[in-house]
Length: 297
Image (cartoon, rainbow, N blue to C red; front, side, top):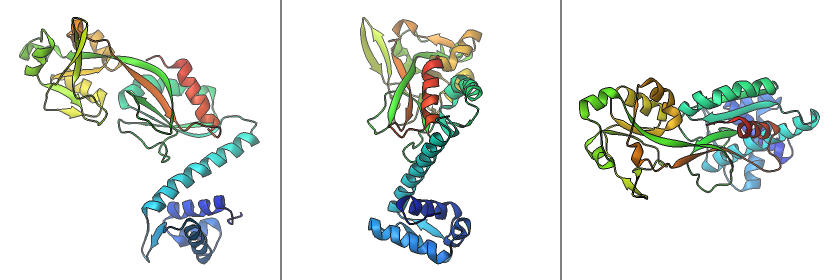
């Protein structure tokens, strides 16, 4: 293997990060530790920045080294995908890392992944469900399904659907605390809210054709819509949540919709977010196309 070019240097750097030491990387690459050290030094000299700090016990990366490592992993993965695509005449294959919110992922994405895998058996779908925002540019995922309006970024976003919101509480909670008759009554109730940064702190309502916001309060905040629905089911308070999350609860009567006459009918967009461009891997392209075709929420 040729380690003289930039891609070769990236490969050595990524291997050092994976193995945790120069000697272990050297064994994995079939090189001597001194050869690996020279390649790292040559990379640092070319970039004009220290990428890693080496001691007898461990290797740590500088901020520049962390940035270079994220970029190197992405570039090497793209190069491997392009070469595989050409060799296999464009047949999508490889590992596809997908990130989705816990509740929406369970209800909407998991069934689609099963159908997608049947259509594309050469793609290994690595699905992670959670409500944290992953770093796509940093290589933590290939595709993320995200709710709400997106900030400006170099990522590509395709809208795959949207969802409405509904205010809900359990019959048991309403029996103890009373049924709110108008939005302002919520000021006397325990309102369960989202705690992530992009969450709107106020709840919108409509009266006489005009939308207004109400600053609700409560003693529980959470990053997961599914967890908020569960808290509402057990009588912890009142939640405003995506309708898809609580559709089954509403059908069973475990939760009751509130203040529907004041519901502004706002819709929260759902996007598939990924790194686009001419070098986008075929596995990403076909998965996004599949979501656009089959996503129903």
